[in-house]
Length: 185
Ligand SMILES: C[S@@+](CC[C@H](N)C(=O)[O-])C[C@H]1O[C@@H](n2cnc3c(N)ncnc32)[C@H](O)[C@@H]1O
Image (cartoon, rainbow, N blue to C red; front, side):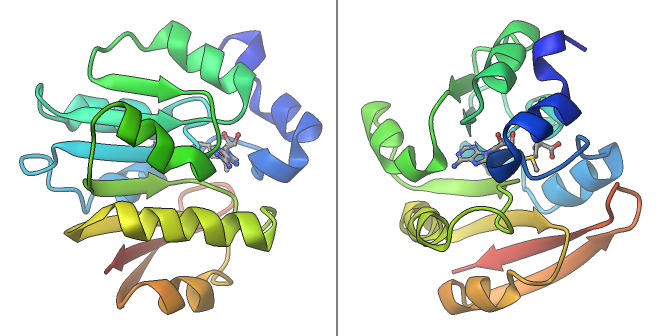
């Protein structure tokens, strides 16, 4: 793995945004992207790809005509993914998920099918978190899904206030074990 994508190192430097000491496992990746209907999905958004474990899983399953927009705030992670993933369907953006609407508009994208988020809500300030979730809600198609993992059930209350349906899955085979929130409008 390239030096600049060292997860623990980025966690130590950027504790308030990285929010994890290790990348997610393939088991968690499968739980996160399992709900996606890849035949149907034309546009998928990823928030916080890190070193790209979910990005790779999505690209392997996504149609050739679909697009994946991945928003990564951390520049070393962004550079690492740019170097290792050459795929015309991937639009990698080195900016905060707070700017999701601005970038999608620039690319002529309206509503999207799925949003796969790894954002560490436990350490993100409340106002930033609310801004991002509100923008995700506005950006999702009526039958779309917002999929988020967290290491606790603390986000249940907040997500329940924004989505009408939430199903929670659990991945024990991850460090730390993680909850997967599958949210519909
Ligand atoms: C818990 S890590 C998950 C990384 C990877 N998806 C995984 O599961 O291994 C959270 C990621 O979100 C990114 N991040 C945090 N705040 C962000 C924001 N506001 N916009 C975009 N990315 C953000 C961090 O830089 C980090 O890469």
